[in-house]
Image 1 (cartoon, rainbow, N blue to C red):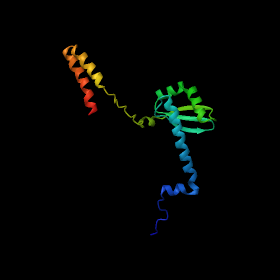
Image 2 (cartoon, rainbow, N blue to C red):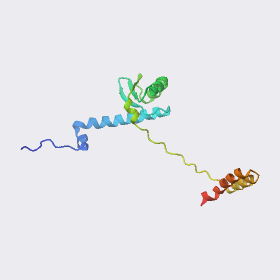
Image 3 (cartoon, helix red, strand yellow):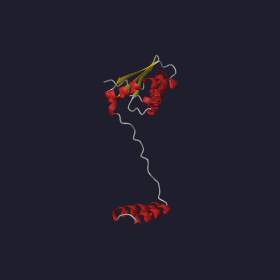
Image 4 (tube, rainbow, N blue to C red):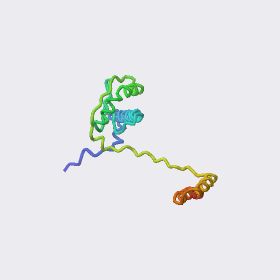
Length: 153
């Protein structure tokens, strides 16, 4: 039996090879184009869309649904002017539906933590107002005033 002539080759080794170096450059360029496209689309709160092709003055953007396609069609002239600032040779924008994009989840937006604090003086005012309120509302306001001391601990 003969030994295997073709052994698996590490991908990094292939990309550093002169013969395949243009693939690495095109991958980096495509990643950069995708990032710039997402920045432009995020200005208009458009999600889950991808730049599929950018060649010969035409940009093709894939959308996950017909609803997004309609939204992009409505914003076509505004988007074209935004894209022309990044890609000056762009002539036209085209859109197509790609349902597979619907399964891609956007990155979660970090929640804003409300770290406002009640000052001791505000707590005193709340307690004074609570004295003149009905019992049920007075209890709730006193609990709010009590939060002043809890947050500082």
